[in-house]
Image (cartoon, rainbow, N blue to C red; front, side):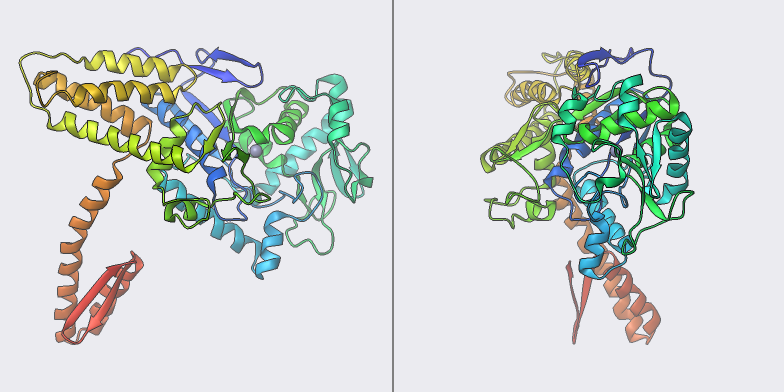
Length: 491
Ligand code: ZN
């Protein structure tokens, strides 16, 4: 089957561009991942789901994709500029933990919630702290090219020199004058030649815990450096897509472009793709606002702004119902509508599955597939994909009373088209079906194991009895011994 002509909006050129000869057999995609110092929240969902959709779609279209999404576990300072305390170190200090304990805990939490949201694991998830050598090498290349200077053990990027030879601000459309007025004057900026220069390497102050040796000082890399170094390491000096949230365009991605161009002579990414932001009741979401909602709160409904719990698939479906470049406002009304919509879609698939067959077909699988492919190829237009699916759900619901009809073959084809788009590409699943099927299966399995455990106990085989209990506990099934047998519950 011929591939659809995928068109993506390139933030750098500010236009939609066809994704064609540029792309070899292996697509390289780099997306800026989370800074792991706090519980995953709604703000994490949109970039993860947007690029998961792109990843799934490219794979379904037969592309080989190497998808790299980094974990920022060092160097992201409080003010996103070059000053302030490291976000992870601060959390570690407050909770009396090792910084890597904090990073590990929140990395695991992030992965856990992403799995719930149906987000596939990327091909590689490199940690910034595991790539200090590569970052030091990258800093050296920029120094050798003459676009950085050393000052008191720290290395800063020479924005003015770079701007003279290239142009700083190509992505965000800012010029140096705007940036000067925007840059906050913070303490400790006296080492820089200009306020807009940014750190490639920072000398660690005595109280700074996370530090590594370098030719310049014991210190740590600047936040923007990890993405340049790790994307180059895993995807080469030029790769296809660099993604992230719009909030990262400046300064983070702008600095990445400058770093790559200074070190390699060209920008690394062919396409810069940015998802728009999430708002809650019209306000930007952030920790500084009261509208900060973690995914745990979202899925349990335990937050004053939430009228109820929303399931992971409801959240995913809600996000996919908006185009990734539009803003998306989380409100209870909109989420409840998404919950109903998802239910209607799943019931429609069920109706198709159960539909009687006939000698002729009034619905065409090939036509549905072509319409969906056309919508998705147009800059990942998932809302149109979903609205086309709803058009067909209406038809599927007319199969039972004979208003529409399908042959055996057409029904098979339709089911495979619908499953491919809904489950494989949109990444949705029927949560109700999986949980009830899950419970149905678990009960006889657990009962079998616990009966074996009772037998082991009666034979005084304590080791086996304990092992069965411990292994059930490790998968979240708590066993409660009773005088006359046992009881159990899923934690
Ligand atoms: Zn990045």
